[in-house]
Length: 389
Image (tube, rainbow, N blue to C red; front, side, top):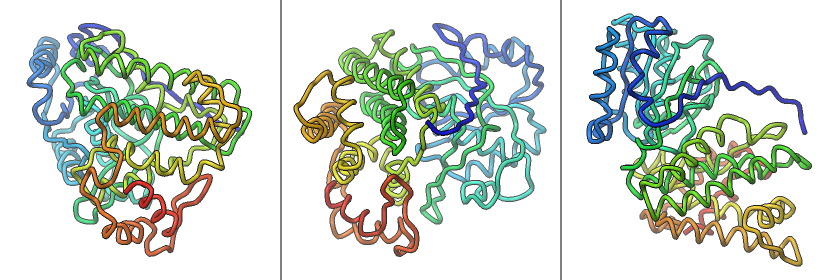
């Protein structure tokens, strides 16, 4: 186990009807004017918008609205949000939605404190030194941004999708009512299940061994998500299964399942290339395609880890680690298929004649590698794309 620091200051306000208290929560914290940030139609369809407005009004909270966040949230809307926050002298941002809305709010929160383009944070040319406080009402279990220190933003002009990390952007509270996720579509629910699993699997499959506490905790989370995911896909209104996914979403990505390990997030970085170039591809769908291919390509590095996963999570024993590894990777790929996720690039209309351009773009003509236990060069990326074709 390597040295680490763990920060998780977000207060979780969990349970039925907690969203009705949002006005009082903000009032009690002393904020005077907020930016209400959300997506497009979902919060209106489920009646959440009216609940929030009523609660804010009853508690005399002044607010300005900015909707329109889309999957793979865009820097252009972040820039618009920064202008609004500065002009209106906003002192708090309320993000209502899932990871895209929360990440957009985080980028606005950082951009509001500087006089340069907030895209520079995503380019890693600048680091946040302060940020407006953020609160969350969560409506989808997936990205875990409600507890994480990460923020991923897309740029339509450059086709780059980049993330940056800072503990300054961890939300101060997150309201979690599983009922708000009942109406999430089967496709988006499945995307979320994949993303939750990847946040822990990518921490688990590292080059740090003998992480007894951390590995056991991560494997328990994965087992819970597999079980709850199956239940939710059969019954979208299963409250306890939805609650499990919501909690797992948060704790899969707040750092808890990676204590004392190294975080490379190689597959996430590869997926950001894909959904940056092909904006219509959802993050979870891209992960469902790339992870099995990457796992097959790198399996020799993780025989011990996969064998432990197979025994504890899948409750299967094999005579060799190699057999256990093959079973585990095939199991996950078949589970993604059962979720009706794409598992091949051809499923999302990406074909072999596109592969060379993708690999060159990802590695800047092989001038840089994607970090990982095995660094991914242009040729490695091409090989993985071939496995996923």
